[in-house]
Length: 245
Image (tube, rainbow, N blue to C red; front, side, top):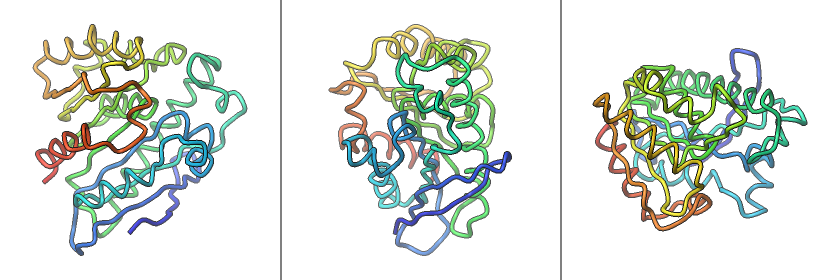
């Protein structure tokens, strides 16, 4: 079952989200799914119509595997500058507002999940793709209560400055991560992402003996992850099952 829900951030922003619940009635582990820039810019329906990621597919795929899934649609109160923040476009301030807003959404999404009777409060994970992956990474740096973190090709977003991937991958930042992490990336993924992941994030996580698993040679580019594909999804579910069940 997938339905639409609304929750509020600590700045009173109203967030629409897709919410999926497994068919078996009991308490389940839960996962927050954070979409990429295309959905934020276009909104859910327009993104689907234009062939971008269909967030609902990921919610359904998680629910089928026994997870309560919350997928916030981050189109809240965007300025024109934020809506134009795409790829290398947009100002530094707009990009910083995008990431900071995403962090607020994750915080409030976690509170929402913990208020639901079907959610096991001590078993909440987070998955993020691209922009949502970068938000998920910063959430893992800031919070200690996620039992699993999946980063699907986390965006580099150079213009986000203090919130970009290069900064998040620094040793001083990854030292704050306590959650188990699984990283996915395509063998033809965006070069800035591959550079930061392979030269900073993975080496720094490993040098600090963090709980990191990764596969960075899936057969595709960045947009390949717009769809739920068995090539990588089985690996994500295996990781979630190990950490959340």
